[in-house]
Each structure stands twice: as structure tokens, then as C-alpha cells.
Length: 305
Image (cartoon, rainbow, N blue to C red; front, top):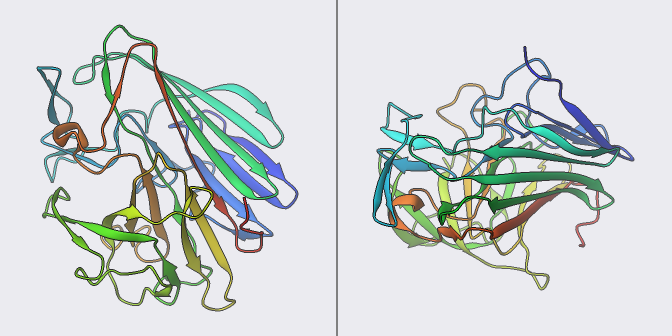
């Protein structure tokens, strides 16, 4: 039996948090869905709303070397020979605090084959006048330094049947080029790749399954992705703090349940395959912690803050 979900609200904003995986099942504002979520009696599919810890995206062959020791993880994307999206997506989380506008969840990531480290995880979801805020903290409670990265997997809705007519702005100067397994093999400027969304433009038939980086940030240090409802001109904004250097943007084409009806915009502290390459990988020392924040400002709300 699935554990019960928990809800939070602020004025006309409502969100539901799934204790299986600790992710965000639903978020609506002003009577409109902000996220392409899933039903209260359903399981998350296609990564919808999930927490991607201790690594986001793909890990080649499920193997990596850290501090001179080779580790091997289960291949959770067996058709491509990868381990994908971390270790907590199907795990039970517990409630640390729950008030009407905020919920904090906890999970103890225990040593296991392929990841013999101990991390205490907290994810907080808060609704306020400026929208949804998500804050994650990982504390190394073990005796060894461990590799760590964080990511999240929300799908934004555009208010239309597909995202093809939606406008999109991604404040990124560089995009990673991936092979057929979804693993980075190089990078290009967004202009060279034909994926320059620094000025808002219609998504059209563009197929997106790309990690963007070299993010341009506003004066407050936040980078903001904007999705524009073509029918009403309303803009939803997903923001990330400076700990998130990468944004995976995905139109969902190969996945029947989300294909082009919504847009995944996935904050990531590191790129795919970081456990092998070390690129932007966090080395979390014993007793140390890492905190990251991101959020969504719905279309009708002021984007300041």
C-alpha cells in the first residue's frame, strides 16, 4: 500500500508531496496546473516530480571510481546500460515538519552496494506569495568522504495541449552533446547547436533532451527559465540558485505519458556521468553538508524575489 501523501497550500496555491520518493506530485495556482503531475493513487512515471539524489541523470555502466575504489551500481536503465537518477526515487521518506504552507521530509540514505556511504537527506517544500520554493540538504553522517550530486525532475505545463506552441527562454550559453546512451561526449555553444533560447522563442518541433550550462544569472544570483503560454501570454518561471550549474530540458518525446504535452526542466548540480568524470561533483567530507534551492513562480505571480 502506498503511504499517504501530504498537502500544503497558500492562498490559491496547492501542492501535494509524495512520501514515496519525497517528490512533488502536483502543484497548481489560481485553479491552473503548474506541473504535469500524477494522480494520488498513482506512482510517478517518467521521473515526474522526483528527487534525483545522490546523482542526477545517467551514470555510464553503473560504475565509477572514487578515492581509489571502484564501485558498481545496479543498471536502472538497462536498455542503455546506465544507472539513472540516483537511489531515493522509490524510497519511503518521513515527515520532519508539516505546517499548512510548508513540509520538510527526511530520508536516511544508508550504505549499500555501489554507494557505501551514509547521508542524511532533507527536502523542504514551501508555498508563499512568490510561489513554490524547494530546498534540499545532504549531510554526510558517515566516516568517509562521499561523492554527491542533486537534481529534481518537474514537468512544467504550458496551458496548451502540447508544448509546441509555447514560448521558451533558457538563459544558457552552452549545451552538452550526448551519444545514443544519453552520455555527454562534448559541448557546443547554443548558437552552434541550433538551441539558442536566450531570447524567448517558440519550441515548435524542436526535440529537447539536452543539458544546458553556462547559465546567465540575474542580480540576485538566480538563473530563470521561462515557459510562455501562447494562448494567454502568461509566463511561468523556474528559478535555480548558484549551486545548480546545469539544467536538463526534455520535451519527453520517447515517453508516451508525457510526450510533448509538458516540458521537464531539471535542475542539476552536476552534469550526467559526473560520478565518472568528476565534473562539478561535490566531495562531501564527513560532517559536511550541501544545500541547494530552486523554485517556481506561477504565471500570475510577481517574479520578483
